[in-house]
Length: 466
Image (cartoon, rainbow, N blue to C red):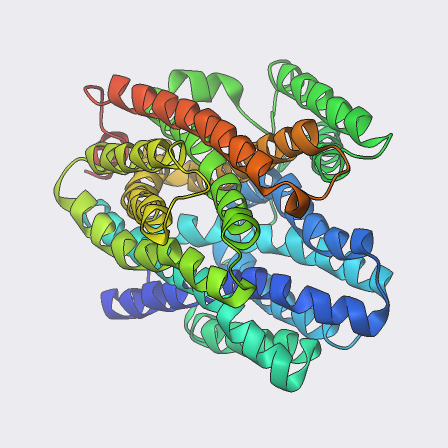
């Protein structure tokens, strides 16, 4: 590379800083939705589509973005991704039509995959293996900070300036974070050759969209059919990848590369906790404990704050010891958190809820950056774009599965009855959900420990670099 070491260091930390804005907007938009719905006259379904569409699009296009990152110029992808994401964010603040907002959110999710795939791949290119844990820890610490501060800042902005100001403020954050990247990064764009197998792309997008929208509409007549169709299409997608010459997802490589496949599987199993636990605890605090939403939000923020603090520390530790060992400690903490959750009841105090959140926050903080280090290093630099896409994909699938567990259990126990009318019954539902999470996190621990004596995720790349 022609770039000097000092310019590379500045570029690395510019990329790290740029990770704050998009997560801030993702979590902050949820706070702006009620005000947006009231002003624009949007239904509950339309409001849910504003969030669900973004998630669906961001998940569906991750693998194509990973392929593109490995086939062309990651720097141009990252720069253009940030610029277009900022422009779309600003545009949402200007429009007053619910349908237009949904379309813009779909495009936002699609563009976000460019940064999700190219960002970690760029860091693999710029950072030596011995320092990657520290850098990935910083990336996740900054992202968790954005997720934590988004609801708090957005609440104040909505109360004083209106919901549109959330998008304008978010645009400013993204632009400020992106400026050093835009000014300091030289583009090396090249035309990708044989980028993607188009039928695989169309099938994957259709499968994920059907699964996401079906899970969001389980109470409707078409929801279960869409969810089942999405699952069947995903199975067909996997079989297709085994037959085509240029697969979008190289299934055989995942089987051969045991450290990569194991790290992705552990992450998928663990991220069932990420959505399901927070959703259940939010209802527990407000429905069973009778707390006001702002107070409940402060309690739930314990986990995010701890993730922000612990993730950089865990990343540095992963540079000194095996990343898989640090990640396994995080899995143990999440098993403990799920175990605490199964013991919650209507008389549980805030200290019990805090214990659940503290263990979860420490667990994800210890797990995330070392596991990302293992994933990125296991793939090798020439496939780091696909590895970063797979990492984001496994997190997304895990959260969707957690959403499915939550929705299915509440639907079975309550049907169409409001949860607030039966707080005692909800406690049983929550404990059953935590039992499922305890099972998934325990399975993740077993998989992590099975690979504990195997090859470390960093070794293939380190030997290649030497």
